[in-house]
Length: 280
Image (cartoon, rainbow, N blue to C red; front, side, top):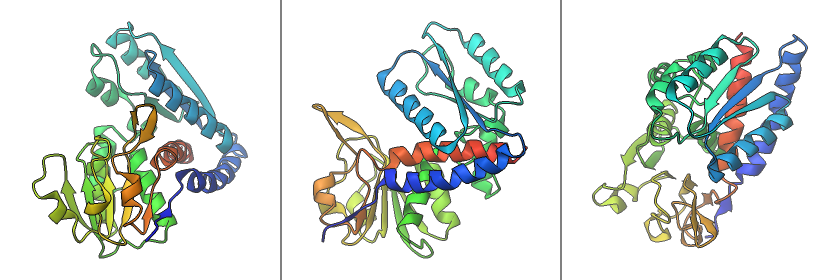
């Protein structure tokens, strides 16, 4: 079996076309969605990711601005900056690019963001609403994953989904989203005992454990759909949490790295910004 490649780039491009139509409607009401990205320090990976966000913003027709600060900025200065963003009615969405320098509390910073502008979906208010099944701004990577599964025509009703990774950013929220579509979800992580047994009856495998090639083809049930969230640079080559070559021989569909979940995460961020503007 040779797996179908689920191209995040292609799915994102299709979604962006629809998002632009929604932006055009807002602009007729004199509302132009605006996203602000707060970037602290000069990490190459963060800068690259921010550049992709700016590119997608242009395609969707929304405004975007990057506020860059050196790594020496104080925690209080960042918190004051977020307060100013919260008060600015022209700004509809804000994200703080992680990681932050050690002297700045991620918890304090995220909690300071107005939940209505929390387009990363990280504030306790939005996480709580997600858990309760209420309307909210959903975390971008989990939201992007669900869009990718939808693009394959997958109906999760009654399906077995195994999620490997329990982070607040991906594993936990994506498990909730799958349960909301009536999937039976098994949560695993790097310390799960007898992981192969947990994978044996999976219809969908979502891997976000943060370890290069943690899962290989021998562990993938024949015909399963595999979503690889990880990205690693090994000897100059990018790979994911899944060994793509062996897994693609067993899976019915699989996301590539790069070009899989990454573009969908950015696309979800743009959509959340538009949703925030639509709710005014």
